[in-house]
Length: 408
Length: 142
Ligand SMILES: [Zn+2]
Image (cartoon, rainbow over all chains, first blue to last red; front, top):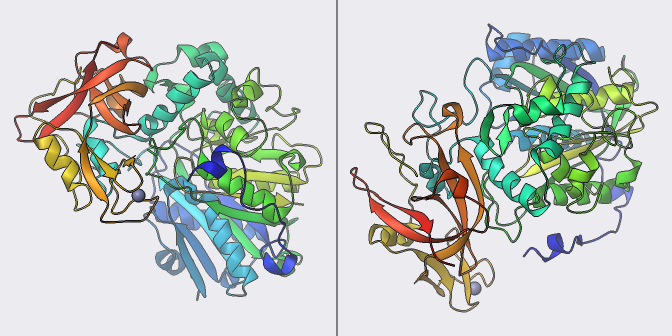
């Protein structure tokens, strides 16, 4: 069942004709909006989401009444009904919900772009809003008030071993990855250091004024071995909204459109929620590989065409692993790609995570990464890649995932 | 390793019709694995049918040798991210059994610095005061 993946052989390399992949260039991201990123917002998630949507509508130069669709994350405590009631959005013709935690980030764009290409709606908001730092934390440990009850699948059979939090689930993959490819904590530290360099240029980043060295990374306290403090994302209160509109409408709006060249999702067999430990190899991310292969297939682009990338980085090992799975380097070479930082920092061959991303800007489950990819296309990033034409974003890992490719 | 802290209840595994045979065996101090007699293949975690031949009537529970090697591990050292019912530090390990499948488990009487990928281990069982039976893995001679 893993032959395709292990042999790095996708089912087809045939590019779809325009009429067979309607998403391509049919829609664009026209507006981005966010609250401040903080450790304690002091207000409700619904309020923050409304603020972010309002900011995105203003950014796009739209009227609130023009919004006719919403796509939300499955595990979110706000919903389109109450958002519309708060913002006075009169009606919707499309709403959808995307599964799998952070894997949903680019999935929201897949849904929005597909709905627009199909003519179901014209102006769709994708969003995420959370008081994750001050309030309910995702995957909070059992026994605390916000208990994550044993899920009704195999995952629920391994929580009793004390394997109960996201860093632990990912650490199991990381442990094997570092072992198989002989990587050290210092190698890994470069990932966090480069993200921090980018955050140090971004006044909206939580770690804007806090530089970070390799030394600090390797000496930081252990969260769950082998992951140390700076290998983990920064819990955040905040909200981000992204507005997708038809390409036709996009041309008439305020901002330079970030056209959606491709938006794909991927699932791979023998999956378990963040704990797919039973596959032939666990030092890779098959879902990401499938998502990437499909993205290259439908867009006709190849990895070396990409000018700038925002890789989902809830934990630092996920960046080298994705560099491999999305085809930017060979299997087992992701760590080499990151070591020293030169290839992934601004000015390098593939500047990655230019806002500081989840490790250093904010952890808004991928939506702040999409906003940064849009800024790269507009030319307004604080770590701007010159003449960025193709901008990649990826979704959460260890779960069914998603990715998008934007162009100017 | 894995010392329980008294007074904090331990979460119970989720048991349904598809994995009940597995947990019933654990109760009897046996580690069993799902096996397809048509494909001669072990399957874990348990599924309602064989993912290779899609049969439902060729699946049986076969006892595992209980022997394997430590394939990967994580070490919980910080209370913030750990399970409150266990004393720190504790390891959660992924054991690759001789039958070729992997299971998630804890260690028994293995010091933290001995927890290394490649360590030969074997299964042991413990009946807990709350009535449930758990399995863990201890060192074995290679
Ligand atoms: Zn079979």
